[in-house]
Picture 1 (cartoon, rainbow, N blue to C red):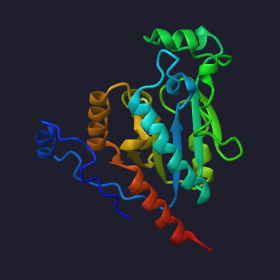
Picture 2: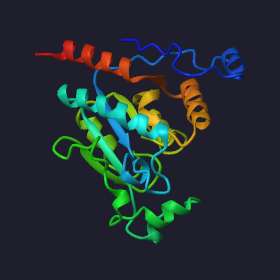
Picture 3: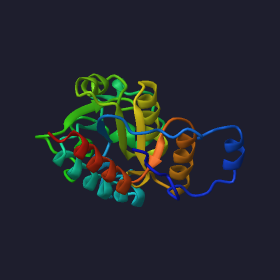
Length: 224
């Protein structure tokens, strides 16, 4: 199945130069089994009372990801949900974000999953300590056990942890899809710019509707 990318991303004035050099010419066809990673939809990013929380694009992504996950769980598609937190500041990398250094700890409420996207009876939960959900975690080994070959990346923020996760997914040789309306950032410009650049190189940028079509098609083909 080929997932169309038509009109998902805004036009980019530099895109013609990249296209002339062959960037983005090869589409990624979804494979035999999808899996979903949900990156950092924790209350620090989804609750407006926190310094990093409540960005409009993040809340839009949260709402759409909840719809994606409802279908995934119904079709028995593997889901990995992550938060990012630390035992103490010495465990942290050298973050340049003050709010991360002050609030991203195990015992802080901002490190809790947003209940709208987390099902403790279904999802595999991981705590990560770096931008990518794959770095220092068991996500790849879990997906290998589940025979996942196509990873759908959701969560926040597009220019940070989403990009890092997508690049690692590509590096682990997964077919990687990023639904534009299931990821979010603080501002529209870095959201769009990073999606465009990932789409040129590593992933197919798609959307919620096309991912749901993929799930239904996959389920029909694998129904026993």
